[in-house]
View (cartoon, rainbow, N blue to C red):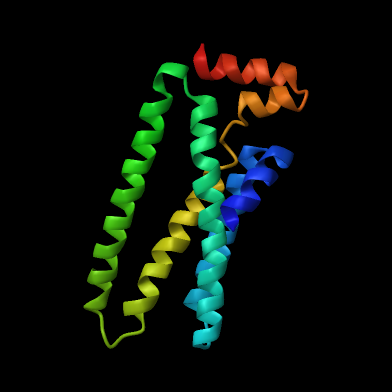
Length: 154
């Protein structure tokens, strides 16, 4: 659902803002899960987090393909998906490692602390991300588009 929403929203407000929205949703939902008073709240947080993942999994490859040089686009998206799978593998090991902290609550809250830290870094870094030249050109920001192209490919 998040990817479906992000596709149209990214066309309207820009790819950069879509990443920011996805990172905020992810950050907010990790807090919900970490401090959930019950199972229903936890499931609601997990569902909201799925929206954030959808936003990011839709928007990040689009940004990469619109910013990268034509001969590097496939490589950039391939690297992104490789690190996506590596991140998933690492998250399994992190969960496994925190499992050894049983019976402490940190055994299940610890992974959410890591999610909060990483999503906060993504949210902050999204302010330094350039808007894609394609989106700028389509929406009439030609001067900014040319400046971005010059900055990226000079």
